[in-house]
Amino acid sequence: MIETTYDVRIWKISRYNGKRGTTYRVRWSTGSQEHRGSFKTKALADSFRSELVSAQRKGEAFRLDTGLPVSMSRTVEEMSWFDFACAYVDMKWPEQSGNSRKGIAETLTTVTPALLATERGRPDDRTLREALFGWAFNRERRDTVEQPQRVRAALTWLASHTKPVSVLAEPAVLREVLGLIATRLDGKPSAASVVSRKRAVLHNALDYAVERGLLDRNRLPELKWSPPKAVQAIDKRTVVNHQQARKLLDAVRQQGPSGPRLVALFGVMYYAAARPGEAVNLHRQDVTLPELVADPDTGEWCEPEGAWGELLLSESAPETGARWSSTGRRRDRRQLKHRGRGDTRPVPCPPPLVKLLREHMRAYPPKPSGQLFYGLRGGELSQSTYGHAWERARKAALTPAEFASPLAKRPYDLRHAAVSTWLAAGVPPTQVAEWAGHSVNVLLQIYAKVLTGQEKAARNRIQKLLEEPGDT
Image 1: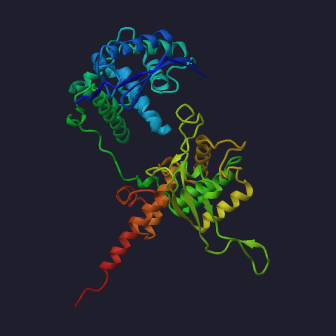
Image 2: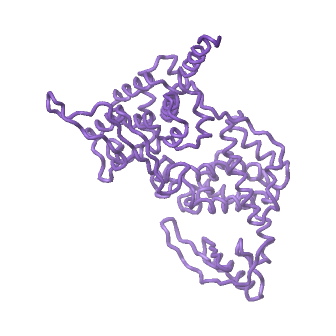
């Protein structure tokens, strides 16, 4: 049941002079809930405010969820898909990471063609995608003056040529939407993981439509539609063994000029199972190394034999692109994946990684902020920089057959190898899960069988057991 109130307060129109142009804002409250509306001209803002004031003077009830008078509910219930999608983006934006914002925009862009009301005057596909993904579904860019003319024209067309949200109660429309999610632009099937991710966004958007009173219920779970089966286990062909990993790290060192300063970065991924965003964001204060000891013969300071350190991972800085981040920079610093703000994850730092980090900090002293890894000119380390170095290192270290295979195709695959190495070494799964930042269930589903040579070792153990003399 929709809740309403007569406790309504309406403020005067305020003018906002931002870097991207001037807007006029209407602010009002229903009960304890505050609402805002932003308009490009004062006349539009005044017209909207006048409708609110008129309804208040007539003694109309206002909806608590939307903030609008009941007399305007019909307009809300017939909200167009385009307006709703923009409202959904704005609702999700503040609490989402840059990558999540991008994923939402991607999904909404994918499904919108199924919700166009007409083909007459439709922009071409490329312009449509550019206008939706790059501008309409990005809260910070939607109303900016930097929009190219073709984008502005496309958005104007979209504003009045999409179907109402209510059509998403029809199974046929939902099937068409899901069909777009399951198909790439080139007509080939989408990866199961992509389908799963986009379907989850769609499901959440439909729940929001129910919350807004635009749908009576979310019918997506009722639809008999089978998504592609997702492969949960890591492809063992991607995971290097220890010998291959060391060869790759040595090869990275030879990839000048960036290579030498990237060896420790990849070492953190391999020896500590850090995600790339966690490794890039590592700071000096996150690293505890054993104290050096004096060599009794030479008196020189050296690493204590077999001594371990510890990394305390506290934040991740995945590369999202400046357009999607909260700071306007290419990386957004956020809490660790699957963790709350302020949570940390201690990870052991084995002797080889102790040595790599010590050498790195001597050659490339941490920045004043404590950041260990940065670009040649002191700026943020880009994904393309370490990605290109990794690709060259693979070509140098691997055989042609290995290079053509999925083996260590991405730096992220070093994390998979680290987790698998711990499991193969007999570390209890609960401990491995804690170090890796996973649940035990996810750990066993994804990582347990990916280490090169692990199957052979398991078979040897079974064979040894079977060859033992039986009871007499």
